[in-house]
Length: 240
Image (tube, rainbow, N blue to C red):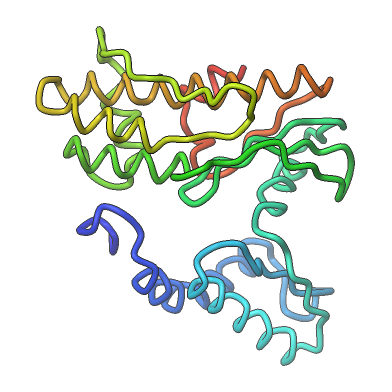
């Protein structure tokens, strides 16, 4: 709610919200897990990449807890944390696998050959997928956050205009800035819901298409989908 008026994340506002939320979140985590400080064997904290101010709040809080409770402190890579969330589902992934990490700040395609064995295959050359959703939602007047707003608007929008697919031949990189420009130019002449559907289809087709192509090329036995944009049902459907 703090970001709605801006149509996107403002780093300073995000940092202040982290300050307000982090201690209640810690207390809630302990209560839900039914553990006390004395039951813990260590403190892990996301150290980056990401918004520096928000990361700083988390790291300082983790340092304070580790010092006060005499626990070891472990720094975790943000994107690696997204990958290892799959080991919490009860169905352990099998190597090798290709991971698509899509969020408001990141769009990465990674080959995971084993634990800690990564090879970057592609990444966005401009906007992250989630950022593009936010910006196009703002163009269409659909609200924030843009991903759920566009998905909801697009659910029953037929027919919809065809937007360009930025395939970047010969590369597993992504680019979404041209799609934003196309949406901006088409906006005055199209229904917002229809244009939302056309935009979503363009993003999903490229994300899913490159991910499957990479999995086939590298003979992966599985695909991992992580990050906030992984909540998009159309993307999950396309990958399935």
